Amino acid sequence: MLRTEDFFRQVNEAFFSGDIDFMEDIVTDDIVWHMIGSAPIHGKQAFMDAAFGIGVYTEMDFQIDTVISNGMEAAVKGTMTMPNKSGDFQTYAFCDFYRMDRQSGGKIQEMISFVIELKQ
Image (cartoon, rainbow, N blue to C red; front, side, top):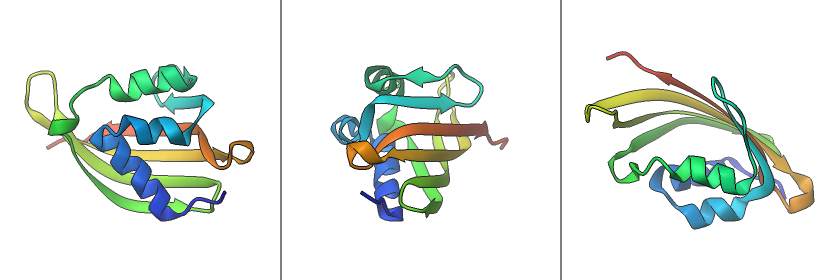
């Protein structure tokens, strides 16, 4: 199944709002998440633990600036603001790249994330 820009907006909205059920349904069992600067995360359970283990969704704000998709691959660029360890809010720029799996009906099989802290 080819995925549109709207689908990838939904993915990011689900991620940033903590919609665990939606995210669990759209990733393959063997997903690999590369967060640049960290070791890759392998498998659905490890992905879910890493993605939803931060627990600050009620205090997180995000904006999607750009979504580009060819149906089986996509890039999403935006910013997010969330509290840091001292409780101050910090803004980050992010860019996520997605690769879909044709065999699973277009579920996300690989995700590559770049996150950079923006100086205020």
